Amino acid sequence: MTSREVSVPISEQTVRSLAAGDMVFLTGTVYTLRDSAYERTLTSLREGKAVPFSFKDGAIWHCGPIVRKTDLGWQVTAAGSTTSSRFTQPATELLPKLGIRAIIGKGLMGQGIIPSMRKWGACYLMTTGGAAAYYAREITRVVDVHWLDLGMPAAVWVFSVERLGPLLVGIDSQGRNVFDSVRSAAQGNIAEVFKKLGIDPFHEYVWWPRSKEKSD
Amino acid sequence: MLSGTGQAKVGEETTRVLVAREAVINQETVSAITRELLRRATVKLPLYVKEAILQAYERETSQRARDQLRIILDNISIAEEYNLCVCQDTGVPLFYVKVGSAVSVEGDIREAIARGTKLATEEIPLRQNVIHPLTKKNSGTNTGWGMPYVHFDVEPDVDYMEITVLPKGFGSEAKTSLLYIATSEDIALGLTKCVLDTVLSALGDPCPPYIIGIGLGGTAEIATWLAKKAFLRPLGTSSPDPLVAKLEADLLQAVNKTGIGAMGVGGSVTALGVHIEFCGTHTAAVPVAISFQCWAARSSTARIYSNDRVEYLTKH
Image (tube, rainbow over all chains, first blue to last red; front, top):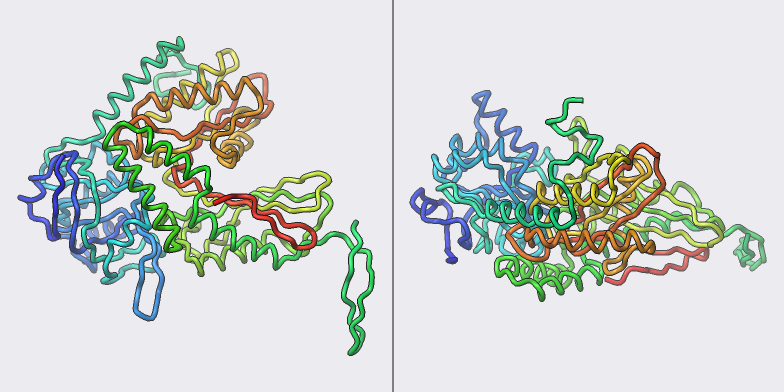
């Protein structure tokens, strides 16, 4: 495992040099994007309307921060990632359209995003979920905020960050990811537990909800 | 009914008179305690949770998982030191209130709790999470359309009211399953299969090391509420029923054998505990609710006695 310093804007060459399992510290501008902001961005693009920000060679963060308004401007008191698995579909569409090079989040992202990451040259960077006080210290300034009408968590916050991380490269631009080995190891380990306890993995214990294969 | 000394104002003169009154809890006290409980819960984890995460760090052998646990522990310390929320998802405000049969509360308890929640949201501050489920409009106060949600219980023969706050984040909440196991099957084996299947499909999404809460029996709403109530039992305790306690221990061992580890990066500590709460059910099927509580297992409880004396029960 290597630890890398990466700054935004991120060149295609830089993103292609990152490998799944590497540690990254990110410096520069990041945009938060989640939930209704994804919806509004996609709707705007489909309708041919401009969005008030550019993600070209940039980084988006699946984050809904806690932000306080002070006399000196916005102050972030907590900022950590939300679960990225629910954005696999919209992120897949947005990546090439907006030229995003890095998605920061937590947990899994679906396999569906891999072709888009491979083709365009982008990666998925994992934070430690919930470590909001930890990452808040790495945000040096709130540069701007868009779409505050969506509410504090879903608005698009523009942060200046200094060595945001450590971030684990979860999916790299070649489509390699850190989850496949964990999932297949877990499948094997669970099969062993089932065997030991005499559980037939194909036996239906559950009446409802019906499994997809069951027709009755 | 208790007797107490009341203040009666007669013109300019104030005299102390002895009056017979019912033990009444002041609405203002309920609001103030709500606000304080939210502060305690969102900034500092219960002591038993911190200890369990530290133990997980000490026994974890995977370096990648140890890195995750190190960040979690550092984060907990930073939040405490600077009085910041331990996680940015301060959840939806859920409350569990036990009202003693020997007390009464002046006014509307729900309203008092909502007022305390609004104050806490502004002052701490909490993230403004509560939205309308259809229009997605954010109230900006963490209240509205039935939130904060209060579950009530009555405790016989006690002269206090107990308030527990459980701020529930949605990374773990949105991984809850509800299933019915047929009673023609072995329930313990069926439950084990359901839990491991759910754990596998959730992988790192519910922010492990987590607590698994299981509601067994009852009906749909009983099972899901029991699964959540199971999080309120401190880590390290087991069910008073020996059969259920054994199942809890076996499930914990099985979940930790998966190797999913902290944040799903691969490791030996996936769950900090598996807690089962149960209720009698119908002869045909056993409802099973499987619920996750992320490592930021926030909760705090206080007791308010009839003379407005307050006792905070959770050590943070």
